[in-house]
Length: 258
Image 1 (cartoon, rainbow, N blue to C red):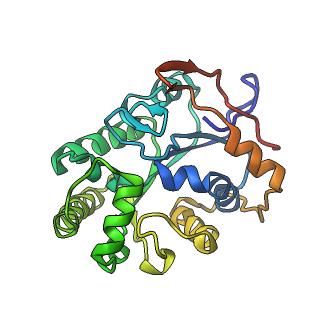
Image 2: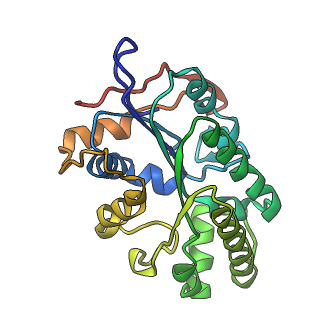
């Protein structure tokens, strides 16, 4: 969880952000974009984490995080008072590199959607970055797979086929009315086909979150100082395992300026 007002205060608008490495890399930009699109103050619950899965416990270097569907965010969300809630679901393709089946991934995402629906959340969900993936040459895919997911051995053609299948299932969820869907244009990506490049992050996240704005919102021109950005990057999750030792950190992880 990123920030909240004291418990005695009237609940602010609530934002739930589910994602993995793109969220971890861009967390200050995502928070800033949410403030710009939705106004403030905001209560933000988020699941950033490099290599994070929607359903599996996964490790990155010496750190392990629980799957998104089993993390503490959901219990915390259920305990909190009713509030106007919006949500973003992104980084859905991560689980392809863990060899999770398409049906299993969609089941995990569906679980998240049903839980968000239960609290009346309006949801936006990103499609997979197919345009970026399709233009990735085999040698670059091999290098990036080795760097980010060394245990994976799936060839590029197979991965692209699975990504297209998963994207079709994501489209089906959108047609069923579970979420508004947002495309991820290839122009947002560079050498790395799955992480939005730095120069495009502000534009990308405002575009992704834009469908969540409403007439009741009071948009802000939000610019974070470097100190605020560093502070956000230091926030610790409720639970993680480092070097085999489980760490539990009190939440909220931090309080935003507003």
